[in-house]
Structures are given as structure tokens and as C-alpha cells.
Length: 94
Image (tube, rainbow, N blue to C red; front, side, top):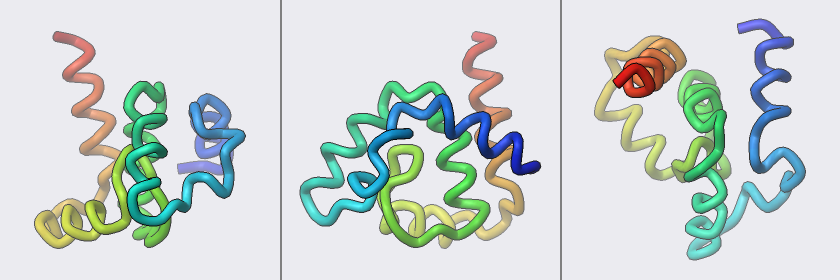
């Protein structure tokens, strides 16, 4: 993925002006996850975190603990971007 592609989706993210709020602890994670629920670039965000093994914060609506669990259960996936964006395209086609 090029730097331009990363910048493009981040500019459309609902959290683009929230910076520090994306790294909450405990119960505040639910509040941040609510922002993700209707974000137009949720899958791009989640793919970025999974593909780059980002350990902190809420990305694409998932906490670090949820992402670690998903990565452990699906070590066969080499590109989460391919999987998640294909899934999104298929669900939009229905």
C-alpha cells in the first residue's frame, strides 16, 4: 500500500481529529468503538492494524486484545487488507 493510499483513507476516518482519544483504557474503549461503528473506512483501518501488528489503541472497532486473539486464531492470513476489503465489497454487492 502506498503512502498516498494510507493518507487517503485516514482523511475520511470519523476519528481523524481524535488522536489521543483512540488509545483509551478499560471501559473507555467502548466509547471509542462506538465511533468506529459507522465509520466509512472501518475495514481499511482494521486491516492497517492487523497487517502491521499494531499493538495499541482501538482500530477498526477492535481493541488490542481482540486483534491479538484474531491474529492467533487466523495465522494463515497474510493480507488482512485483501480479506477485509474483499468482504466489504461482497457485502456491498448484496
